[in-house]
Length: 341
Ligand code: SF4
Image (cartoon, rainbow, N blue to C red; front, side, top):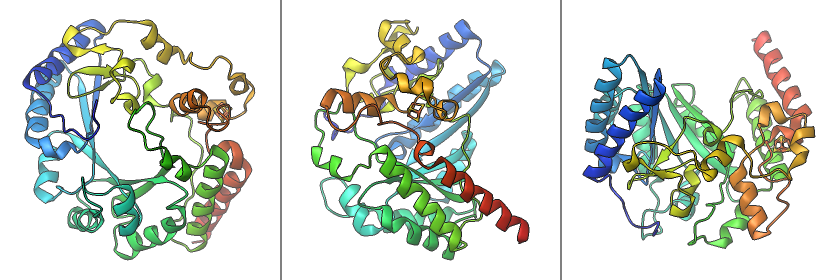
């Protein structure tokens, strides 16, 4: 599938999504339904999202299902009116993918078929809607951008965005796994797990020292990737179902199609739920980080293993594995500093 093509939700897929949800409720009597709208750029097809959400919300209301949603967007089409409409369809928070500078944005996230950046547009739109809804700015940390993060967060704070319902989240730059169009030069920018961990805690340490943040991260026990969970599915615009959203460009990784209404427990599907890809990765069973990390990211590990790039046993490991003591000390320091203030 060509990643460059825009695939909008067809009427057939629209109806199939509704039928799939209804059937899933019949089969499993779910009490909660959470939808993440993502793309490409989901706001391009906003009217369809609203209409579909209204129908889903009506169904949830009738059947006592708690409904909530969020959206991942580049924020180029975001404004106050859009926020109001999003809140009406139960979108409770927004995730915006962003680079820390305009130059990096033009390199890593250029406007289609150009080398121009959306950075200023995105940033102004965030300023316009600040305080109306919680926003998380998601930055994919790479060897190209890690030195720019602290000044970016400083800018957020001086523009009164940071702490005003706008926060930032760091994650590793993902390798677009199984994408046949993969530009392998991207691998030069990707941190190995231990390098990523160092850069991650360096940034938090500096932010704390400069009094830009007041609390540093603490390891959480509930951050397992949704792809391993039984009731989490990614559905593409043609109705194909995937477990990991990194796979949506490869139909061979699909576990079914919603036109069949029911999820079949195929080998491929159960592999995800049982997390069975890496039985050779026994080190997880002896790793003290297992309860926090829950085995890391299988897609990263599969990529490394199948392409023979890097140490696949190490890849996908959680940042706490390498900087556990330092991370806890930083957190303790930040708590102490808070006590004093
Ligand atoms: S940190 Fe690495 S070795 Fe430890 S549980 Fe996570 S993936 Fe497994």
